[in-house]
Image (cartoon, rainbow, N blue to C red):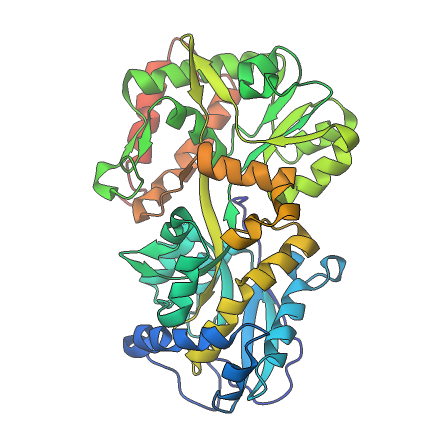
Length: 445
């Protein structure tokens, strides 16, 4: 996930027929399921998702007749003609599989990471079905902007994903979304510069080539501190009362390491796309990013394209494993739906094995469905291996407790202070404790 604000640009399409979008505040037909009934109605509607597969014709023909318009939000890339209009294609396939439902679709643009800020602005007027990054969950739940899934929809999520993926869309035992990919970052590198042994350790890489890393991006910098035993909200990231522990000698050792790292002539701070630009012109030999940059990295490196899980770093003579934040991207349902059974069924289909495979083929979006990951052609893909190896071996689930909001700005500013040489060996202990204090303080306190 790239932590940047993408403005919401709604694009109406195929909007013929009755205007009965589930989340539309100005709808003139039908009634909205109120906040009090939304969770139960969506849960009951979960059984409708069993008919969401294009092959389940018998179940689809038994559905009650419904005519409505669904509003669906997804990133622009999923709607672009350049990538086969994945979203529109899937929605039309879903429509064809449900002959008793007369469905029209209105599409809007909203990046997964922006779901919480966009949906919560006007929950009743937001999309019926939308994509979200799992760290948006607490804000969406607090605003009554996302429905609990039950019935067959919840069972499908449990049966087709690893437990870690299921946990990433669960709060207090309830499932709130249909996952369609893991969300993390890893390493792209030039195989003509670094060997398979070299890429196991960042310090070894820095002795042989130029490495660009987004040290001023708070989604990335935590990996160094977590490597040396620092924690965010306990060992599993769910204990809000435990706070963030970037304190003491373990954290100071990392700050000292980072002071040396930014001073290394082979290290380049990656900002504003400079890492990818360097990969293209050969001035950079390795960058750290995610699957969204895979095509660009492959084009830049050609036959020397390499991709792998994160390396270790060496602190005080000991190897420590870098660990990225990881989570998932999923499809959620607005609880203010007139027809929750339709919205839940569509969400289930957009996260189904069929839709995930199309997503992978059209946009290189890495599937998380366990059956798909076992298919030979997908399992052989180096990008798939890198993302899933990172998720399994060199990452932690990104905490989505409310207090995590206090982490981002102090961490970003600390990275900038490292690059500007404001943090030194002499003041490392003091600056580290200041960082820890600021990450554990609310800006409104």
